[in-house]
Length: 117
Ligand SMILES: [Zn+2]
Image 1 (cartoon, rainbow, N blue to C red):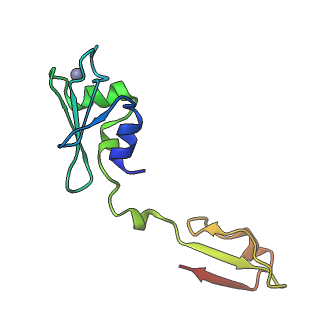
Image 2 (image 1 turned 135 degrees about the vertical axis):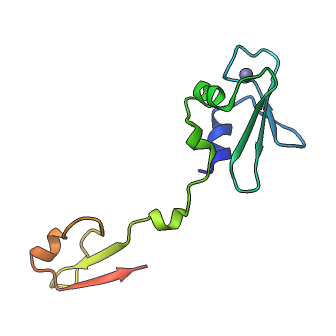
Image 3 (image 1 turned 90 degrees about the vertical axis):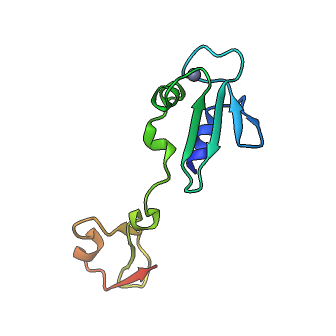
C-alpha cells in the first residue's frame, strides 16, 4: 500500500480535487472539510490543514505516524533473499528467509539449495 493509499483509507470522506483530495481534518473538530491531501512527486503525502494543524497532529488523529507519509526507501532491498531447500527426494521444503542463521533443513540432510530470484 502506498502512503497516499494508507492516508486515504483513514479519510473515508475525502473528495477528489484538482490538486489532490479534501477531507475533514482528523487533527481537530472539523465540520467543514479543511484538510488538503496531495501526493508529492516522490510519493510522499502532503497534508495541509487550513485550520492550522501540523502534519504530526493530523497523522496522529488518523492513527498513523509521520513515517507513514513517506514511501519506503529502496523497498526491493528490504526483501530477504528466499532459498528453496529441497530434500534428498527433490521435494521442496518450505522456503526460509536467508537471515535465519542456518536452515533446519540443511542440518537434517538436505542436498541442494536453489536460489530463487
Ligand atoms: Zn486540522
